[in-house]
Length: 220
Length: 282
Ligand code: SF4
Image 1 (cartoon, rainbow over the protein chains, first blue to last red):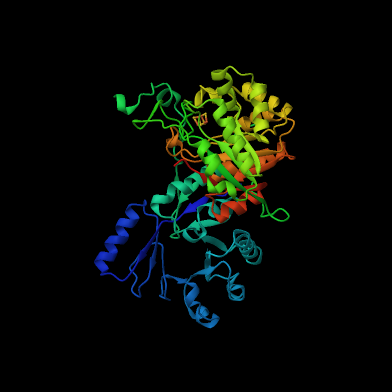
Image 2: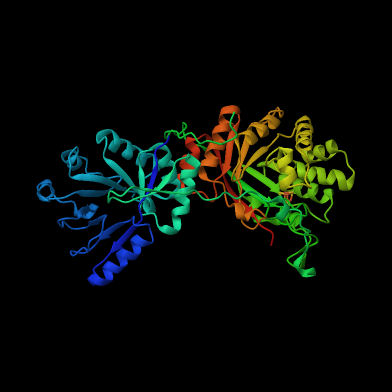
């Protein structure tokens, strides 16, 4: 149980003026030690070391969402990498069968629909792992939830979370600490991941809390 | 053996028929207490709470008139802080009234209250416990058994009874026909050694059939900075208990838990879920 856990900060970019978009990306990367993934929801992406776009654009990974799954011919015609997202209760196994193993599909992101029970989610992940060994499997934290994510990371050491916001990183670090697995700041640019130190643990402090005289505020 | 509590991931595996849900009516005697346990939000400086005098209890009135007592439950729990004024006979009457109004199995007070009345009213422990049985209680609450390790208790609740005192009272309770009840509080940073030491103590109870797991709820207490225990700490604690006390039912309150956590608890061996309705003071 020594697999590392990756944290990939993500910036969603809509259509903006190029100078504004460039500045946003610059600031985003600067604030994450030059690591971070940019997801463009526009037809005119700007340069970023690790990026994908929700439409097929040369030079950018194609981010396929559940509502926009194209046919195999369209996918094969695309000259670039593909990352696919799918609901955990409706995985397009046949399509993935045709793409994997192969160079096009770089990762697969599972989104959990609200009604999908944890046991069924575990089965879906296990099915993906056994049917497509080696395919990078990622799981969407906001839809999966923190409790389920913690359990899934423990059960499937190769799994990684996506869409964890900066202000919730401490929760991921906590999971890493409890599982005794390092957490790394990473993206898909090829740059080496950066280790994130664990948070200090608080210990109960009897001297400060207990040995004080219990004075009612009314008498102060 | 290492002190570290290590969670061992397991595959989803629901027990046959899932867990047994017990519907509990919780009657709180008082939400204030002078005992100053650091993990408890009933703990207040006496005899004032936030500048107001502690009001007399309404337990007797509740036990006689509260409509909740006319409904069906599997278990009624009467528990709370330590009162400042009301005598033992007040609680005895209230418990008797509750028992007469509702046939559910009754878990009344705990070793902490029993020792309190033993001290202030100079009554033998056995007599108090026999009266509790007479009033209709079928078991003594697990209060006071959070962790039966004296150095920990000294730090967290130094005015409270010792582990041996807790055990002694429960052993007398067993003799007079009250079933023993034990709990275990999971706090952030709990170690396997602490859990095993706790188990070692409660093994001495012959009638112990259920252990209630209580994750620390630190909000509003001295320990707020610690937060709540991590899910893995709760699951790992259950694993240690299941391994060392396989014949004991592990129970947990599920009132504020998500569906995922409920599933996880079942897979890890919690076989009794307590759904609670609480009767609060007016
Ligand atoms: S004795 Fe019980 S009610 Fe009183 S402060 Fe301690 S835990 Fe709370």
